Length: 370
Image (cartoon, rainbow, N blue to C red; front, side):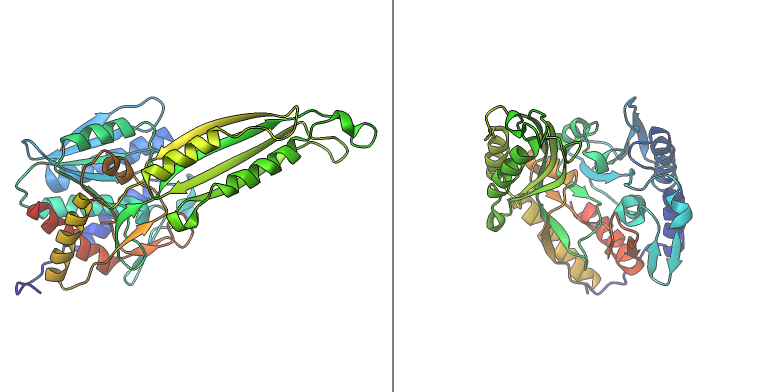
């Protein structure tokens, strides 16, 4: 401890704010609901921080919200997202509920609690530089409409703090795998499987060869994994299949591995004469590598956590976030500053209130220290 009394934020007020955001369901593809949730986020920051809000309007997705506190050059950038993976109506099945120190409700842990944390931390902070908070509406579906905005604001910033939830147990996330997604389609030639199978070209047999070739590209010791997660093809048992389709998820820990695997997937060629391949997709998120700027931010956060009386570990994760984009363009980025908990994207999603309160005070001190 640093010898001073630690004043944690108002638990009741934070829970009330979180409930309003969770009840405002915001599935990523639903623009109207995402925009209504953005209204709630804007109201929260206006009430708590007096932030100046800019609405980045989108016709294809929910609007993105930019909130500024203070003025001047070299701001801090805080990244949040208000979209969730949960379809509308989930709140009836999984209501917002506080059970002791545990909070459940769709999207509370990932990551509406992080939005509330940012608002309450900035309300109490005496920051020496301006702070920009971006709350985007499409993080859960790839950030295709928000990436340019995120990178533009990051290039102006001294550092980026990501309010995604902590790793289970409370660790910071100082490295994340990058992601590439591909769809492989194979066209063969149909024929009667009993009468003249020799006239056919089996798309399923061809795609089986391609799945084995894809699996051979993985390098788990380097953190490179390849998963053919969806495979479809054929029409009837007595027809040589003319078409097959595979959906592929690729994860990697370094830019070099990303380049190697993406090039190799695009270079796939048919094995069977007469088969044709079509490959769509590519890099979704670059890897967030543990660079010197991130190491410095993590060390600062760990020192401040010790002042608050708790230990803060760091870890890497296979999942991506918008911090992948900012780290990849060389901006010091620290992720996983949201609360401890678990069950992201699952019915068991929950956050732990003591961690949430501690990390709100940690965020306040981190903003002030930077």
